[in-house]
Amino acid sequence: MDGEKKAVFRVREFDMERDLAAAEELERRCQVGLCGDSADGSGEGKRKTKRKKKRGMSLSVEQVGDPLARVRHAPEHVMLVAEYGEEEEMVGIIKACVKTVTRGGAGKKLSSASSGPEKRQPPAYVKVACLLGLRVSPSHRRLGIATALVERAEEWCRARGAAHATMATTTSNAASLALFTGRFGYAPFRRPEFLGRPVHAHRLDIPSGHRVFQLPPPLAAAAYARLLAPQAAEFLPADMPALLAHKLTLGTFVAIESNPDPSLPPSFAVLSVWDSTRSMRLRVRGAPALLRASLAALRALDRGAPWMRVPSIPDIFRPFGAYLLYGLRMSGPAGPALLRSLCHHAHNVARKNPACAVVAADVAPDDPAAAAVPRWRRFSCDEDVWCIKNLIKNDNNNAATASDDDWAAPAPPGAVLFVDPREF
Image 1 (cartoon, rainbow, N blue to C red):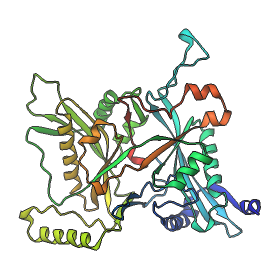
Image 2 (image 1 turned 45 degrees about the horizontal axis):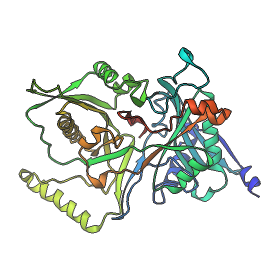
Image 3 (image 1 turned 45 degrees about the vertical axis):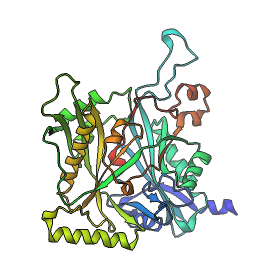
Image 4 (image 1 turned 90 degrees about the horizontal axis):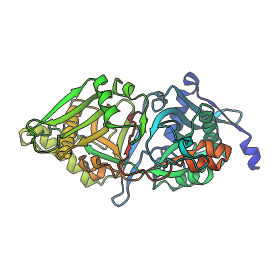
């Protein structure tokens, strides 16, 4: 019986003209459940739902516009759909791309099969598959559709030279973690933190002793090339200059001290700002009526008496957009303060966009920059989990490859995890 059910669906590539409406409808049907994921293993999912269980509140994210927006930046990308029955109803989708990124120093071991100068190191740049947006219709789960989509996506990426595959989910999404770490052989890998804060109606102050200026994209690319060496950064894209010059990168900003103390090492901070208001919408759900009323009253008071500078925030209980901060780096004793000034500057830039209500960053929890990023607890989340799979090892069952290239090992001290805003 199960075999008969599996035989009535097929997997093919997405066709924008033919499939767009059906894909959007499937996304809407799958936006149920605690984590916004399909229980049958729509894995990566809306990593998207940042759940605050104690207060019953959650921060959910919905993709809007181009369904391929999160993978289109990669030259090699695909969206697969699963069709069911004679009616060819769309019941599942998955997106994937193959990109070239740095792998840092995690898990790099010299081959035991060779000696002396013959010993090899894994390359600084590798091809990595990124699996995103796995969805299965709630009425068609447990038919093997998720398995077929993932296996087909991995096969597509492996054929294009991907050595590893990654996916992201949340710790609260037990079904997703069980599916990928169990059936598909992925291993929990990195745990970036989502740090967000709302955009206030008023400008945030920047100390008079701090100077903020913008770098043109070529100079920004040169700066990051110095700050993020391939040996020390994970997932830094090979097309970093293209990301910095992208129309949605609003700028790369540097902060320095106006009158630095000559007896101390020089300090600076740098970050880039990505406008995601065109590709995603966030919404706070499950808020108590009292909180809603209180925030509405603050907005009304601020509109009537702006000179009081009441810390009012936009209506976050309706869909809103966000600016994402990426490439956060700092150095020197004043580095944390300078980075906070840059976050304030990004906030002030966001105030000019009525669609933006939150400024956020994804950083590794042990990154020193994480402590300097202003955040609100209710707009932040530490549940994200990246998982990784060695496609070469699993394809060839080669033990030597597994020992030489165990990227799932803990990141070495000082490693930087780069989160690409195009894939948020």
